[in-house]
Length: 260
Length: 299
Image (cartoon, rainbow over all chains, first blue to last red; front, side, top):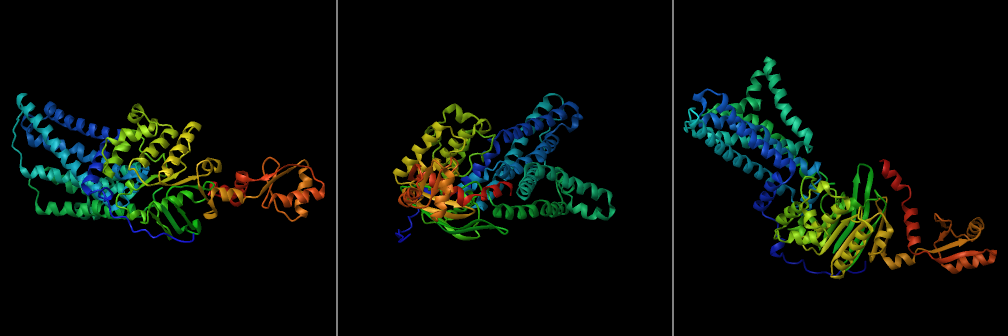
């Protein structure tokens, strides 16, 4: 090459501005439901939630058939399954190699990660709203069928429930980012806390630590109204270990990993 | 416009890409040639900011890829047509990209149509696509943002002869309208038909680059004799190193007159004596990169 023609850098055209976080979050929300796996997971969560209401109406004592009862149980299927959607959101980019397209269109990977976390939190909140709708319908039906049908529910239970959904989907996203492999992340997400729970339950020396670090135990307080400060602290500590730690390591991993 | 300067990528002690420099000018198609594992894909991934170079740099339209605000509107990239979620429909893949780039989703059917995928194909999941259809979808994705630069890694893989012909026309047209195209392939003949410039890479290093016509002219003379053994002796005596082609001819990196005289002096009957052209480039390509591809295959 002999000479380089110096041309001034083209001014930024409006359409070449980076996509905003809102737009990226919408894209990530859409990606949660536009694959067969994602769509079916959402359908199964909805069916399982309706199933919990049906079980209560069919077999629970009449006095338990109120909004508080329905809502408390309705949270469980999504608390277990929604994090799998979070895991897939992170891992599918690598397992299905869509990271190649995603990061070519948005080279600032941290923006994609933030959008994925935001989409996860949004779907957790949306799902809580949907659970509430299902619980309301079930309560009305129970009232007609002779159950309690009471619509009284402590406010704390609602937002504790929402917080629990958020904690678990963030944990799923964190495990997904950490492991970047769908089957491995799903298995470890389900198995590790369980193993830790069993260890904490059987080895007395671990019992104290387990009360603070076993996320399944600490979050069970969230399904009962009126959590105490101590219970919140335990949720916070266990979430730091099971959510924040894997998330930080996972984000660093996604930012550094070669895409191919 | 793509500028690559001294790009190097080292994995441990292995140099996947070693001091690679070239440019792709607007209005041209640059063929990026090399056997599998020569470093083509690694170079392209570094250009697109997907892989961090050990040293050196690359810019697209004067800007490092990662600093392009909305790269999809400036560069169309197709690095691997198989890298799509099998559970998504073709139309959905493009819709997501359009949303990301801030393009009206009405462009999506048009983009599908441009690459020869009809509405029915757009509604099918990528799982059901043949490799050729995936390449077409990948091209639609690359062209969606109306870019000025195209970076395509082996886009002809899996296309049928009609598809390859169609793609050549599309790329030629894109370049003729002022676009820059970087097109990789491991088959010389595939890029020869459309490229204006060639960059040949082997074992991570550039082994030849330049204007296609110039490169083809510099590749020497092809000579075939009635008695190949005698020809080998004559060439040897004249101090002319040659490489045998698969069909018994010899490519000699020199003009035809020198060979003709040597043969005449020895009273040798020649059946062919002509510029080697692409045959010569292919021969050079094979010689320069021989062994590398085999090593890569089992690495």
